[in-house]
Image (cartoon, rainbow, N blue to C red):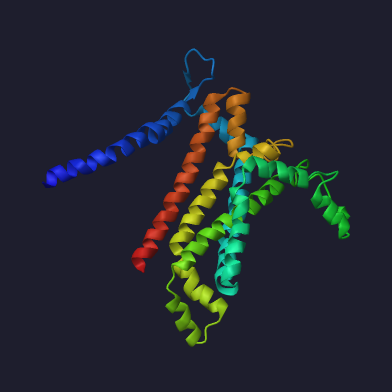
Length: 294
């Protein structure tokens, strides 16, 4: 009976395992293999070049600029989506009336439900140097000297895209934290109030430790998303001006589909996979260790 039950379990699990092998793990392994070849869409036969593609990538200043932009994306996303979202969620749960909470949650979540393409086009209009709302607002408050072509200057293009991304994502992660906070037993807060604990102390002593698992999830999603970002940059700047807003995803796209250098593109894809996998594995290991220590 135990053997039969085990086979039934495998019968249910096997389709998912097959799908993962075919559509996830095999493409990853094949991409790693292809990164060792020089080839394009019209190559009769890929030519083995070993690690030459990796040497070319690590010697390419645009690659390092794209990696730096992804890193900046990740750091700022952690501050806003990991930090500000948690504070916002705590404020919603503690300081806002029950009726108003639902309204505010909906308002915060609406940007996350919008298409990235639509949001990108919308912010392109906001950043427009001639009639954009941002420059007009700066002029209206006497800060006209700060007005600029936000998406057309090397020093501001990537930061403008990152700002748009935070506007769209903060509400989503705040809702995730709201769900985690609602699962905390209210008795903890009531006991803290009896002991004279204020909102700030309860946040650091109760809320922050009790949402640790959700924080781990948000950190993994945020950092992975920062290194996988593509649509926002492609819609708003396409990596310009002068490659100043390139990220690894857009540089991969350009190499693969505009310059037809598939081997180099496979190399960039492998680098993205290694970075995201290493970050996720490290975060999960730290989270598991904390759980066991607790």
